[in-house]
Image (cartoon, rainbow, N blue to C red; front, side, top):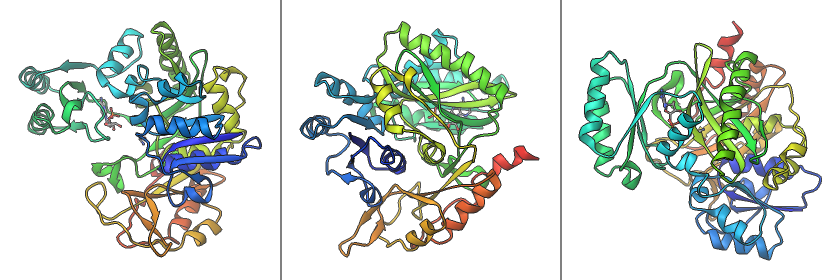
Amino acid sequence: MKVLVVGSGGREHALVWQLKQSPEVETVYCAPGNAGISADAECVPIGVGELEKLADFAAEHAVDLTVVGPEAPLCDGIVDCFRRRNLVVFGPDREAAQLEGSKDFAKSFMLKYGIPTAKAATFTAEAPAAEYVKKEFAAGAKGIVIKADGLAAGKGVLVADNEADALEFLAGCFHGTFGAAGAKVLVEECLVGEEASILALTDGNTIVPLVSSQDHKRVFDNDEGPNTGGMGAYSPAPVVTDAVWKKIDAEILQPFLRGIRAEKLNFRGVIFVGIMVVDGEPKVLEFNVRFGDPEIQPVMRRFEGDWFDVLKKTAEGRLAEAKLAWSEEPAVSVVLASGGYPGSYAKGYPISGLDEAAATGAVVFHAGTSFDKEGRIVNSGGRVLGVSARGRDIREAIQHAYEAVDKISFKDGFCRRDIGAKALKHLK
Ligand code: AMP
Ligand code: GLY
């Protein structure tokens, strides 16, 4: 069997790494991939936005399954494009991808199907939105969340603890900071609790959650500094207790499945539900229609089974027949980033210690890496590597991950030193 993974980040590397272990898979292609992925897959120089070219490639190379990593091609209709040509593809179609592509669409869906979420109001003009923000603070709100409706590369959300910041961000939205994505804005109640990520496969007939995980969105230790794409993740997330899982299934995943069926949304992929657990009650912060990154890295480290078979059955509407098994061992993935990230950063610094890190038993997933003219692996993106390790318990997994991290270096590279610390708090 031949499989094509679309994307070039740590998520795609983790997917490639697990897919190539499938006994059925003879070739893994990745478009466009990165330096690390090229050790595990045949990289193809086609960009994630070149939908027809990707479909041509899949057709010409008799690819049996295409797995789409990032949200942008999904929202642009890559699945529609592949299905028109009878190519098997994992992901929601363009209409269903609006669950991530439009926060207003997602919020209406949640309300219609009774999925617990933060109270919100949608605005298409600045003055009434500002009025609403002022009213909320006057009524005693401790914070407010402003969200640009469309895709804004993870930058379209502000959690504000004061009116001035909220109003400034709002003005930015309506004055083009996020282009068309900010023409519509959601103003949302601020939920206070602990976040977790729930990834669930669905083919529209059934829904099957993967193991829970937790991201670390802020750039610095103790959740300080600006938001990033994610600085590290671990699985499982102890905040998702058995009691919370029951609620997630009954109040979120089953209503989600009912909703996509009732709305006739064509969804054969993964729904990534960002939740906030507030006093033991899971509430949805957002939907994404693709695997979370870095969350999928520790999740892939724990998967035991045939990942190709699972994804292919999902794409073919036969998810009920798929078998998922998981290691009991927790896994941790620590992200190494370029100095300056999430702001601007310099590229092209050689990375040393990758083999030494792998020799510890950790798996190093590559995100922003490429080869320089001399063939050395250098940093070429904000998030550069995801160093993933397992352990008998979370404490040991953290120790193993940092042991490997400490073998690696590149100029100005940095990481958070407290990935997994929240899980340890639950042990006390
Ligand atoms: P989103 O893109 O909607 O996930 O928002 C990005 C991040 O903002 C989330 O992962 C949370 O950390 C935070 N966030 C979003 N919505 C809320 C909310 N209603 N209350 C508190 N924090 C939120
Ligand atoms: N780690 C969060 C995301 O993938 O959006």
